Length: 358
Image (cartoon, rainbow, N blue to C red; front, top):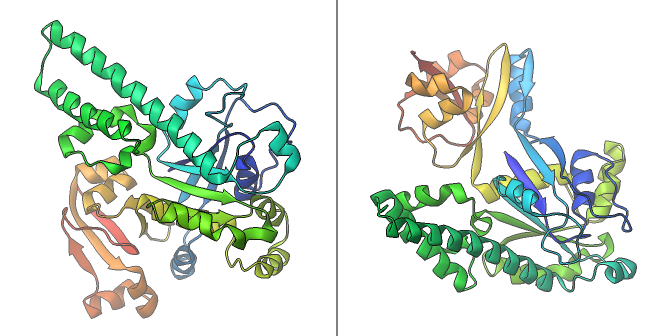
């Protein structure tokens, strides 16, 4: 899974990236804006994997991961960063993490004045909607030219209908998460990777000594349906450099119980509607990420395409049951070891073994 950390310049994006990945990328306020993304892979902590590893004693234990891409500031008129290629890359992310500057720094505000968090968000959203509008209108112009040349297939007509819905939504200053397309329309425009159609988590990046002062700003976002959280990026970066026991002591001082890695992984899973299922055995215990509502064949395809192609049945039991009873033999005796078909909807904590034939 790829998540893009984005926002206007000098909002603390790289500081948060450093905290997540234990990196030491430059955060100098006087530095020229970077031209390429910083990339880091973070393991998704899951105590269930730890307990399954204790039970099965595998040769390898593999956690789910999230690949974070920390991009230079975008949609800022004075930025020296060339945005065209970068925006094309950002669109490939599955989720956006939008960082808004809430911390106090008069010198930085003089160099890069951004305004209030709400003003920053409004500015970012306006540019994002404009970018989507330009893409949609350019495609509609090409479709119209095609009609004049006699190219009018059912597929193109479905695409045109979807694009008109998209343009209407954008003209009303609404992100594309606000509209519903049918399955045919959604498929027709999927390749555009519209910015405002992506799920987005808003991070209010504050000083550690004024976290509680931003509660009303947080509510202003959540009341409009956005997922938003308050963090202290610089404080989190400093924590990431400490030994675990020392870090826990400082976290307790400001009421934090989990690391930024664990919290952001949880928030991202929640944002995307993801769950975890597991495969187990003497060779490997592994966590896999899948969307809620996905069936057994889709889960099989996550493991390997051959398993989906030749799917017969899924042997299935629940994490909680194997921990309670201690062995697969006991689960079979209790009737908790099941065979499920291709339409079975995978649940969080399912442990699967796929029967297949190719």
